[in-house]
Amino acid sequence: MTNIHPGTVGQAEPQRPLRPLLDAVRVSKHYGSNEVLKDVSLQVAAGEVVCIIGPSGAGKSTFLRCINRLEVPDAGEVWVDGQAMGFEERDGKLYELTERKLSKQRASTGMVFQHFNLFPHLTVLGNVMEGPVRVQKRASRTVDAEARAVLERVGLGDKIDSYPSQLSGGQRQRVAIARAVAMKPLFLLFDEPTSALDPELVGEVLTVMAGLAADGMTMLVVTHEMGFAREVADRVVFMADGGIVEQGTVDEVLVNPREARTKRFLERVLA
Image (cartoon, rainbow, N blue to C red; front, side, top):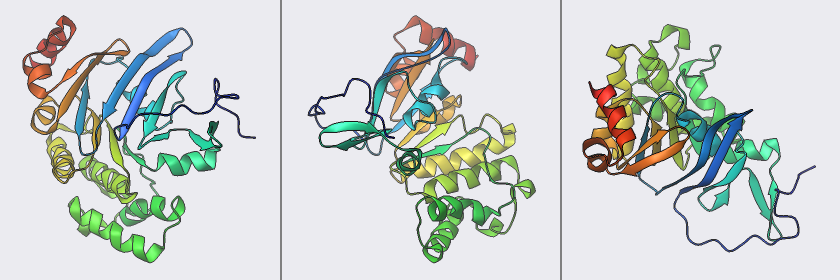
């Protein structure tokens, strides 16, 4: 049975002002006594590229997973295009989504992981087609043509019949990006997409991501690639100890940070 969201019993959903594409409001998450996220709020506008930087253990990846409810926040809300993630409105109240409905809602937020997460038994083309056909129930013929076009876009048009084991790490990550794009999401979440790659393969993935940004794709990117953030980001967010320490333009955060915690981090990573 679908449960009513705590705090909404007998209450009409309040009227909310106009929101950006992504609105995370006071998101908190803990594992036992370890408080990983502490009242994290962030807004992302359509077409914006936001890079999240910070030390290991800052809560960056957990924050991304809370946005698409791969992790359920202990407190706070995430709104995507005016819809509450994990909930649906009926008769002016919010109710938790069933797992099936949540899967469909989650498809609006494409996710690219550190370690690719491709299906080893499917070809490159099969991996890209799987979500649109299985989850979105779209016609195979249409999806086939779209998947081939997306693979061409990421430079893998000649690899459609290959299996993941036959690809380099950079190629596998480009397949993962193509798979996310094929779902036609409202925006893309990248969780340190180059951290598992050999250094010589990083550039090919960043080039694809820069191309998506240039085409207007809304992107929230957890990354340690400062050069990418400098070149592509509209805004940089620095996280540490489960919270946002500061955010602003590239110049404001990477060149002239205000906070001592940000300065110490940048001194270490840029040394």
